[in-house]
Amino acid sequence: MLLDFVRAHTVLAPVAFVPEVRLRQAEEPIALWEATEAGGAEQPPPFWAFAWAGGQALARHILDDPTLVAGRSVLDLATGSGLVAVAAAVAGARPVVANDIDPLSLAAAAANAEDNGMAVETVEADLLDTDEKYGVVLAGDVFYSREMAARVLPYLRRAAGRGSLVLVGDPGRAYLPPGLVKRATYDVPVTEALESCTIRRTSVWQVV
Image 1 (cartoon, rainbow, N blue to C red):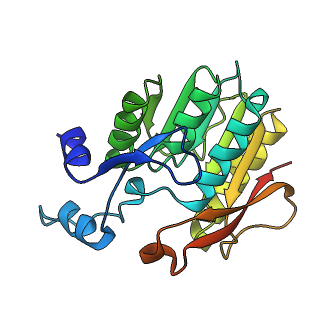
Image 2 (image 1 turned 90 degrees about the vertical axis):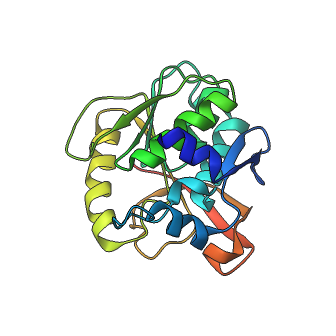
Image 3 (image 1 turned 45 degrees about the horizontal axis):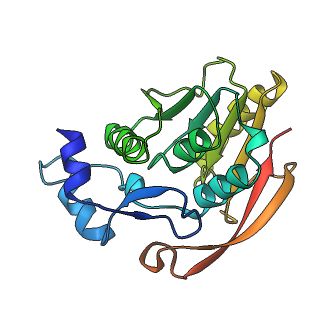
């Protein structure tokens, strides 16, 4: 069972930059990645087992200003661990949807929501060609590759064009597009084994 795998390979602890949220996090990334591939099939990196800088910045931003999401429908796109979705729920968003294409990610998001006593719906699908409207669309660390950026940006711009508040958390990834509006910048603690540093200067941007 995926939930059992997530719970067996992570430790529940407060997020460094968002202590209001407890998150199931892996202690050793390479060992966890090997464990996910133990069945012989190649698996994506376990993005779901860490609090990435973009997600931490987004979570901090909405918890510091809950009026951004309170009482509004929220989509956390490419949710990873579910950190941003859980933070949105804590800030009063209703309903909150955590979306990803990795079933382990959604299991982690479900576990993290439950551990924080929050209601989060999980949706396993590629939503980037869809147009369902949400009050707020949140996306942390989605501009890490040229291919991902090329698919995500049109979706985010369409959402903004429909009237959604669209916020992106990004620590200066290579494919962050121009034309976004900076709302805040934070120095976010990160996992050195993943980022080759202990602090990432990370901004929250609005897509317009």
